Length: 151
Image 1 (cartoon, rainbow, N blue to C red):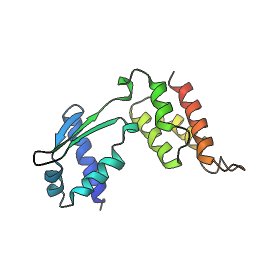
Image 2 (image 1 turned 90 degrees about the vertical axis):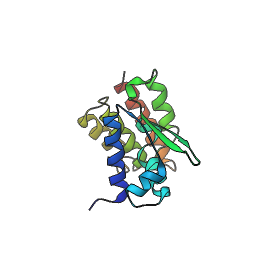
Image 3 (image 1 turned 30 degrees about the vertical axis):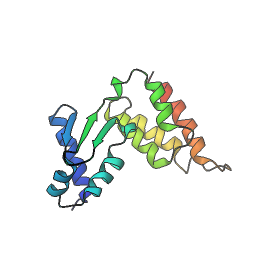
């Protein structure tokens, strides 16, 4: 059986698809629907809907509080080069790099094959070198590859 986080993620993604990429939900109602704590909803939003995957989340707390989630297609950004540079930064973990690649693949900016090649180039086995900053090296390689691919 799928974990609650995965079920909530799929539910929100389905809502976004039906609503053309923008929804407004109440955290408490969603928590009741999935029989979980509101903090579980926060966890899902933080880990499964980050900005570098193209999601904008606005939250208003209080009695009439809500969460607005907007799926912004990566193509909608005016300067994809700027987004890649800021999302990756000077250092990136392999996990976050994979998430960025998956988001770019979902937006059809890179193919499955390109995603596989990039993953192979930036994985820990490939970066088996004498460096204290493997994540920094990974970020440099990933940024350069993506900047060339999305042009």
